[in-house]
Image 1 (cartoon, helix red, strand yellow):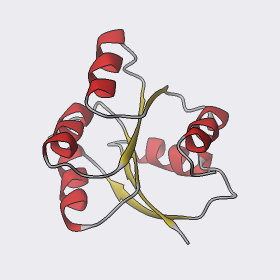
Image 2 (tube, helix red, strand yellow):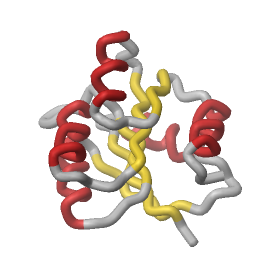
Image 3 (cartoon, rainbow, N blue to C red):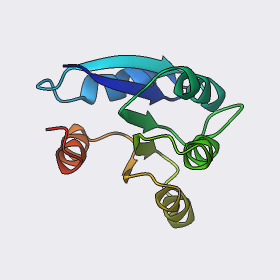
Length: 121
């Protein structure tokens, strides 16, 4: 059965890179969001098990998406993938419920290990 996955990043190249880095032994049903507002709209209308989330996006940033998830008790595993690797940002996103903070450029092995730790592999 395919894992419903939402990939939210304003960069098309980054979204493609994240999707390409997914472990081939897993099957995903992938939806893409080009900004945080669109990610929230998808979260309101569809059910996802996993969200791969960038922090720096227009309209609503990744922290805003995490605040929405927290406030609305959305049951989803969130992995933040961002070049904005400030310790304060890491602390904030983890407090808001993200399972992991992975630095860009994305390391496919680190992503696979995180998915393993979360029980997807």
